[in-house]
Image (cartoon, rainbow, N blue to C red; front, side, top):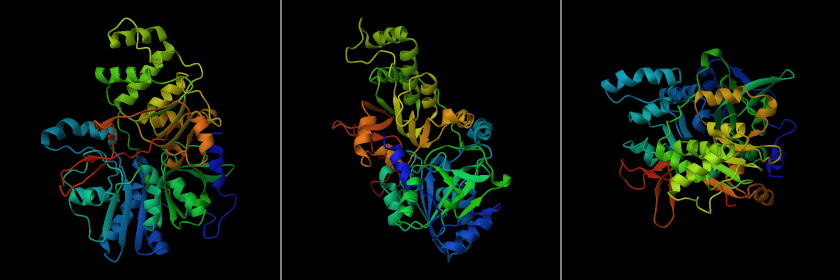
Length: 444
């Protein structure tokens, strides 16, 4: 067993004291914000998921209430705030505005992010992030000064220590035998860990959902009964297209890196990949190695500039296959499943992840999977994907011959690697961008 089945044990089999049997349903963001304030009070400590899973309308309504009423203290804990690209001048606007509208049109801007960029955050509102897009918040002193240098794996402890009392999250919805269920979908990462803390009596907060019909309903630990939520915003008026960054074209250099990395992945092993050109190139290299092995050998010989490939390389097709366990899921993993490379099951699962982000085609592919196909992809808490300490023996047996492939911003002569996501100011300069890893690679 790889630990997945054991993790399921914390989920509740009957309603707990203090939980609504059914959440209050709302169609108006202002009304749900008013209900949250009435339930929780005027000192709000609100947790937002990393990246895609933010309930934009709910947090915007809470922000608007705090901006209009200084008696409300709003602390927002966030990570990887997603924003539409903004043209810097008229020429850029003329060229890129139609592309932005086509790719991101309809995605609601986050009011707190706009206020941060304008240096216009009200004094009773505080925004704290632990995961930045590299360089995104340069020359924004408040954002950098309120950054928490926290490892993604340990972010939950920071949220709980600061008195988290509200979690707002975008969710998928479905009815099973006439009973409504909600899926945490793209962001089981920290939410499942803090829900486990609540179930154990170590936390008390309101879970508030916003339904989005474009979110894939992901089975597994993030498939929750309605009783876990205190309130849900569900209306056609608050539907919006998911944030969907397009895949970048892969350069020849990145393809070469990906092919070299493909020669380091051992059959029967475990794979984690980071998003970006290198991850896409690696996936393509693995597919060539598996489907056209002679061609892969020929390419590797040319890249090595020698008659024989390097003896240390792994160059055979995948007989046993790989098991995927990755903090982040993205489209390349689906290609590896389709190619028959990700086929080594752990507890009946090919791929475990904690959050996902990708182009529209990725979300559509997940939505259109059959129940048997989607059951092989399970979303888990980040404590599951990034650590081995819970059920360590089983995880070590499952995660053999692991390979971690990510982009990086800096590599030091001492061997330290700084990841490309996450920046913080390590000095008083508002122009300092210092990368810090959001991951805690599992030792194998």
